[in-house]
Image 1 (cartoon, rainbow, N blue to C red):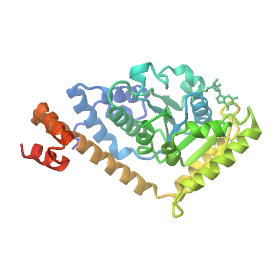
Image 2: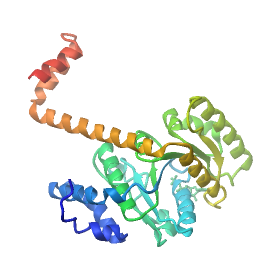
Image 3: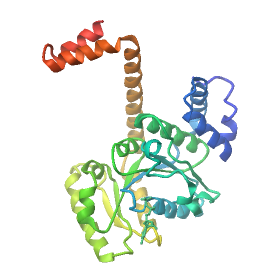
Image 4: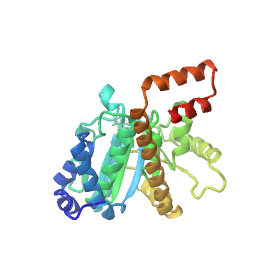
Length: 317
Ligand code: GDP
């Protein structure tokens, strides 16, 4: 659907100009209808040039060392010539001031690295809205030549599922005191993990090794026998940088073991279906009196009609 004249940001973005990238992402975050239209044009312009990156999701409870780990991994990769973009999905940032903070002091070395770009979570809106903007930011970063995209999330809720749905693989950071820690991690988040890392192994190597063993057992129990990839558990110290290359080696191994094209195609299809469902629902809501839905819901709750009858009646109206 792209028009013959490209958006003014298209060429500088494709040339890898950082300011153009920042402006482009800001455009996708705007809710002004004319900005939205421009953003979609820009995305359509650059789409053929996107997709050539390693997309890694990262999570872990606050304090586990996510910023420190991303800084260590990011600098290690950027020093080797990779171009690393760090994005975040943190729907809480609007409400509470943020578990993932927008300020750049969290990753001081990566922030000033010429090969890195750090963008805080879009703020405001629903989780779906925040996730959509982060997906679009991934496309823009890829078009600007970033070949590693690290997407961080807070490790406490629904945003993990969203991040897992937009990345190639998911890294879960945990702490050496595994017994307590495993209880704190929601089972659902464990199920998303492709690579688990016991961080802060420098603080207590013995406990970290024990935690690693426990994680391995848990992961074995959670993984179906016919899975193309068996999640791994590693130890690392984000502070000293120990174990970081081993984590990256597992990222590469994962990418080799799985059919990434198929995975990404499936992710895109799910994303499209989600957007369609949302759009249809919005249109339906716009065309029907809110009181009617409420009345039907009350009827269903009271047992005067079945849910299916209620839905059918609303669709007929
Ligand atoms: P986040 O909330 O998950 O982003 O965690 P941070 O990266 O802010 O780290 C929380 C604290 O743990 C900071 O004081 C870090 O310096 C410290 N930390 C992070 N990684 C390590 C590590 O591998 N070893 C040690 N000893 N401390 C670490």
